[in-house]
Image (tube, rainbow, N blue to C red):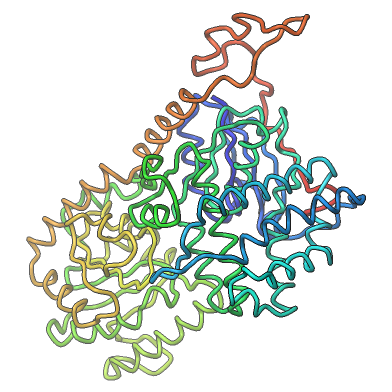
Length: 558
């Protein structure tokens, strides 16, 4: 098969989302051919370059989402009328909106709204194809005025009618960025049209690219979401004005619903993501949970060892940021020390951005305050039972060494998607204490202790229970490792996607018919061996590095 792998802000770039699992998937499916369609998020990401690509990657096409120039497309009167019609229809769907549930998610659009949104979206895509681009039109005064008329319409929701000029400008700018894939030249027979299957590795912009390949070329779409993009958009918009928040929630909700409706198969990464997808309109019959694949080999030595470095040490591993709630962990550790005075806590991880740096400083000060008698001073660790460390130092040269350094691994998050650190601890055979957030209970499956979030007393009691019972720790650790090896390995992930690829392509009608010189269908024009994995009918197009081409927006998007 020929797979068009669509990634936003990740693979094949060195940094970004979904880089590791995409690379492992491509390398694990050497019998297939991959074309990579990469949407970059920043100039820095592009400057850092790509990861080494395996030979089954035939080519890479890129486009940037972080900047765009005017495409130079001069619209005539008819084209402007088409733009106002389709953009106005799309804006009307956003402004009528939907009710919000208790979790903050908007209700999925009705069937009529979904049809209107889809017709408007594909109408804009066809206009972009006919006129050579859409970037200038999306940034024009016409777009803002069209959006304003939709907000002032009689059936618009009250929040939309309250939108002011700065709000309209902010929404129009966001829509321009989100709709940039409409102007790409990827949807031809020499692009995604040549793929047997397009695999969008996330929702949002990547899913939109897959939707356009389906619309223009009838390429079936597989949508994978390890983190639900719609949920991320809701969280990102919490600080925006109410009108901006409502309009953007309406757009991303409608886009997600369209992607869920048109995708052949949807693969959430866990039950938590699956519930979100169902809540936002995904058909349950299309959903197939595929857990992320972890490289178990680097944790094998620690996982198979019969003892740990220190039976009186608790270990926390992750990115230092407020969502990890290290403050509650430190207060819980103060309670642990009252019961088990010899216990130490190792916090291992680097801060995530400026916010993480500030949070780390706050946590260091709190640790010194909670354990004043053991700290050498307010700015030093000294004999403080809490240590703040990073991977790569002399004491913790690797991630596996961090988990091996303690008897119990603790997760104290208040927000969590798929807890990668928890799976790593399980692969190391460690007993765990975790907060009940995200997919934690699904991942643990009874092989660790789970407590409510933001409850230091419950967290402390669970830690003390395991510290006092080494036999139970050993049993839980062994069960956790067995569960992780069964469900969360690279091999499991690759095998699952291989089966899904076969299912989707097997259920898709043949799209390319070979014609003879007279233009009539040629029977047996495609030899039978062409359907066997491998390259039997023609030589590979290249023997060296994969072909790298850049597909910018017309006159810009770079």
